[in-house]
Figure 1 (spheres, helix red, strand yellow):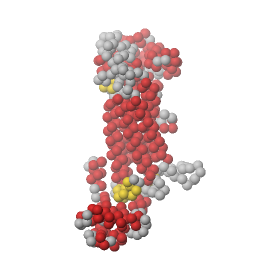
Figure 2 (spheres, one colour):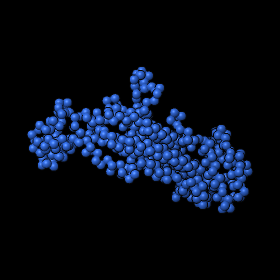
Figure 3 (cartoon, one colour):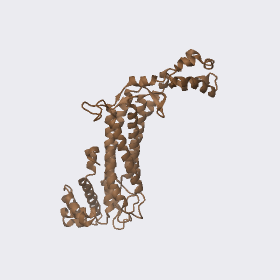
Figure 4 (cartoon, helix red, strand yellow):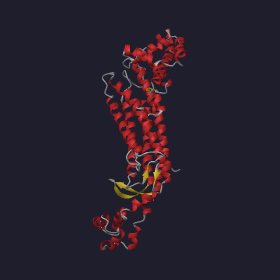
Length: 435
């Protein structure tokens, strides 16, 4: 991922030096287990750790060797032998390259998931804080982009909180899905290495042994992981689009924070554009796109082919780095979001009470009108108001069919805004808990 959308902590997980350190740890822990089983000398295992534990691996040297060998793991092992010396002959015994590569990838993905879970916690904290601030701030709910019925702005944020809570649960599950280790040899049969080595390495690396592997850890695990990132990105985009719509000049119920010295347009000095939300929309598209190759990587030939490798070298860092950046940007956006209750009220009043049409429909049916007739009475009085030709409440009071069922006072009662918010506390308890 380009530096513009990269945060250092996530990027460090994918740096070559980090990858080589993980490769070394896998090899060294395997050597420990082999030594305990009496396969290699215990002194050899100790020497491997002593000589290379604190080494800085020479990335340029490994690249140089790989240019000749055309094999990255062999290049690393050759460089490791230059550091360790003769005891390096006991490294990688009974193992295949994928034992190292797949176990390392899963270590990286679990570390990335830990950062993303932390990011989600920040998004959730921001949403919760702002939701309670505007728990009872009236605003208009929209369906198909058209005024529907009143909601509160706190409910809008609570919707997002619930969605990102589900996202967190999915990511925890996805992390568990990829937290496996395979040290099972060339085709997964443990022919040249004891399964207890895998168990030892898995525990040392914070993973679980893969129940059954071929030459590789099955890629359905990774497909779920990247699909989960894609769903989270969709939730990011959903909230970003909501903010973009609410910042429209004609709406202006909420707005991204505009810092001192910020510029909105090279041509129009007055512009305050929702650039952060628009940026999040674009980044979300990329994260979703990375899920597709992860799914296509599931169908490998027989016990393994290498078609997944090139894709994973890109989607692993790019998807996690991009989503990390997007989530932190979203958290900051929500924390600083400018909210305009006066504009919300103005928009609520814009249709002259039409947003209460369903309540009038129900009131008429409860007083004896058929649903078909009640709908007709309400709609024929609503349409002139929609065209700007009168006041809804006044027209209803003049309608003889309506007056057969509802008094003026009963009509007025249906226009109580607070009626729509009587269960907000219940919804908040469901979303946020009793506290």
